[in-house]
Amino acid sequence: MKNSLRELRAERGLTQADLAALIGVSRQAVIAIESDKHDPSLDLAYRIASVFQLSVESVFPNPHRPLQDSPTA
Image (cartoon, rainbow, N blue to C red; front, side):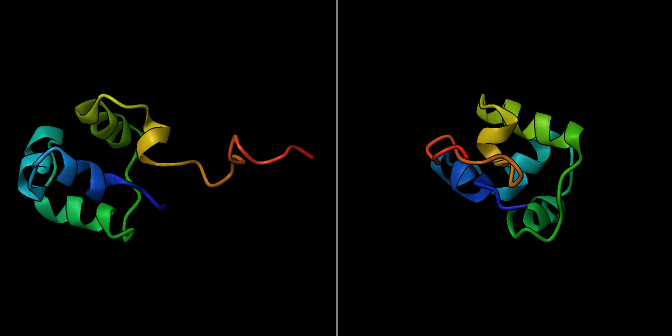
């Protein structure tokens, strides 16, 4: 699942360990999510979005929903 977690974390000056502590997972879990090797559970996705005060879809775009700028069929 493509996500903007790495960019959001860097913009806020958080290390992977900082973010891991805030969301209650290991640093390795953060690395796996950032590198698209692991998709977070819904609960974890909400915890991550909450840290950045964003919606879940702002952090983890829905690949099954067309972009709002695209023309509708």
